[in-house]
Length: 568
Image (cartoon, rainbow, N blue to C red; front, side, top):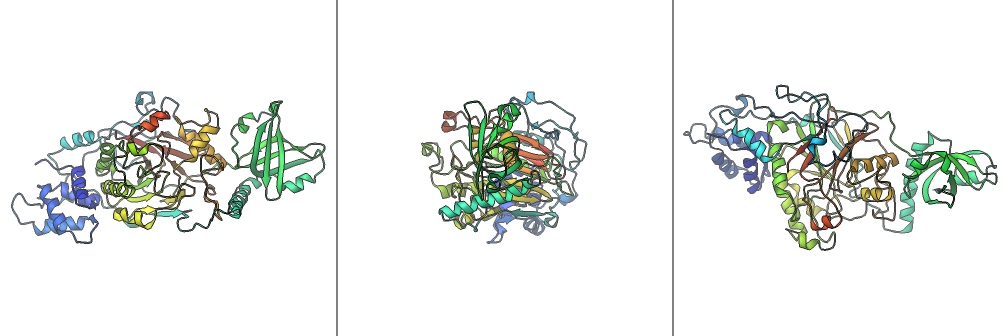
C-alpha cells in the first residue's frame, strides 16, 4: 500500500490543531493505514497536548498491534526498516571565497544558468558529509519533487528519522531588550543613546589611532599631528571639490577637511550621518581644522575567526512570511514544510525567522485592498497554523519586523503577551529586533533590515543596491551598527543602551525586509538576506520591487557552508 506522504500527515495534524515531531510523522507514515493512525492518535491525544510525539503514536500502535490487516500498527518496527532513499540531487552551497557575492545577474534566482557549477556531494555520500565546493542555488524542493521521490519508493518502508537529542542543542539569545525599554522620548534619553554609541564604538577605534578629544585638539599648536574619534555631525562638499566632515564627541565638535587629491573619495562616499568615525591628519596653522590623511571605520577585523558546531546540524534562515497578504505564497510555504519532514532535512534543527511574520494592517497606503485577512490577530492565528507544519522538534527563534504588531522604532521589543499566546504552539523564542543568537557555537546577528533602505538610498549603487542586498549589509558590518543614520527613514527609539551597536563580531549576519535574496562573505562574516514568501504586490510594482520569493537558505552550522533551496 502506498504510504501517505509526511507532508499530508503534518497538514492533517495541523488541521486538528497539533504540530508533531519528525519521528512521530515518520511512524504515522509507515503505518499500513496512515489515515486511521492519524485519527486514532488525535482521538487519544491528551487534552492539554499541543504536539504529537512519537510516544503518542507508539501508545496507539502498541494497543492495536493484534488487530486486523487494516490496523494502524505497522507490521514491523519502523526503526528497523530499510534506510530512507537519499536525495536525487546534490546540495549546492555558497562559496567560501571572499567576498562570496553573486554578481548582478546571479542575484536573479530565476537565472540559475548564470551560476557556475562546481563539484558537489553525490547521492552515494553520507548526508552528514560536507562537500568542498557547490553551486549556489538548489533548483528543486517543491512539493511535486518531494512527492515524486516518495512515489518512486512506495515499495519500501521509510526509515524512522533519528530522534533529536535536546541535550546536544545549544541556543543562547543575547542583546534581547524585550521588557527592558527605559526610554520616554525625552531629549536626555537620546543623549544617553548616542553617548553609549560613542563610548562603545570609540573603544573599537582607540587601538587604531592615537586620538584626542575635540576640546584638546582645539588647544594643540598648529601643524601638530592629531586624530579624533567622533560621531559624524555633518558631511558636505566644498566649492573646490573637497569634503568637510564635522565630528562630535562628548567634549564638542571639530572639523576635518578631506582633500580631493588624498585618494579618500571612495571612503567618503561610504560615510553616513551619525556613524562613528576616526580621522587622522595634521592641524592647520591656526589649529582651526584638521587636514585628513586617513579615515577609519570601526569595521570587522579581517582576521575574524568563526565558530562552528561540533556535529553536523543545520539552521534554516528565512524572513518576511507575510501571512494575511493576498500574495502570501501558501503553496511555497507548504512545499518548504513538506521538505522539512523528509530525511534530507533531518539535520535542520533550527529555524531563524528575521521578521514580518504577517502582512500587518495600515503599513502602507492602500494596503487594505491587498489583504486576504484584515484583522491583525487573525493574521497571527493563521501564521500559527502554518507554523504547525514545521516539525515540532525544531528550535525556532523569531524577531519582529516593520509589518509586525510592535513599535516601528528600533530596537523593537518582542511581541506582547497576547500575540505570544497565539503563537505558543511551537514554543518559539520570540526576541527583539535586533538580537544575537548563539547556535551551537555559531554567533548569528538577526536584524530585520529596515535601515537597508536608507543605506541603499544614500550610497553609490556599486556599494549598495536592492539587487545585491548583502553589499548593503557589508556597510553595516563596516560601521558596526545596524542603523547608524538617525532622523531619516529608520526610526530609532532612545534607550539607555544603544542596542543597535554591533559590539561583538558575528559569524553570520541575517536580515530580510527588502524581499531580495543575496549572500556573501565580508571579512569571514557570512551576510545573508533571505528573500521572502510573498509574491509581488501592486504596491511593490509601484516602487519597482521584484521580490525573490520562496527560497530558504540552509546553513551548515559545522562548516558555515550554505545551501539555498527553492520552493516556488
